[in-house]
Image (cartoon, rainbow, N blue to C red; front, top):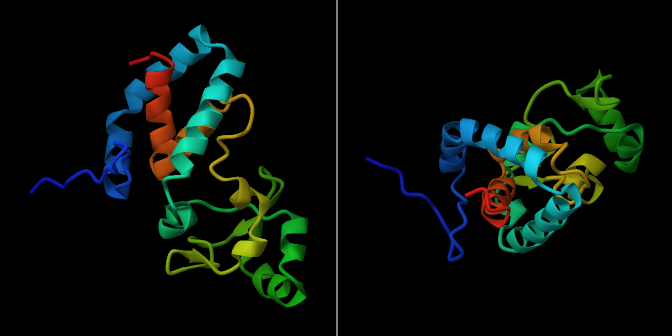
Length: 173
């Protein structure tokens, strides 16, 4: 039996299983799209389009009802992120963290994040900066960060829909 694609009235795909499947199917298309962006597009113009699409799409998708990023990604905690948790919480999670020199911070030894329960962050108000700014679509230089963005394409409905809409806006498809 074929699984139905969950879309809202604006034709956005929010079905996590389908997004993961489509991401696999579109790998070659996305590589070609990246080549198109690198060779044919004004970076500042693309940044402006991405920010606009992000604003429109994120307003229609409730991240707190999904939490897929918290399940599948490792948040990086900087020293200041840990300190914001307060002394009791900070001390209790230190045993669960390991240093990640590549990211210049700390990540949990196991996934998902131990603050993630019932599709909610137990430390939402004090979550790390990386979590606060996720999915990082408002940062400059989208084209140069494309491969990093693609790491979230298969897990985040916002990233998936922004990228698919960008293909249309940039006249790739």
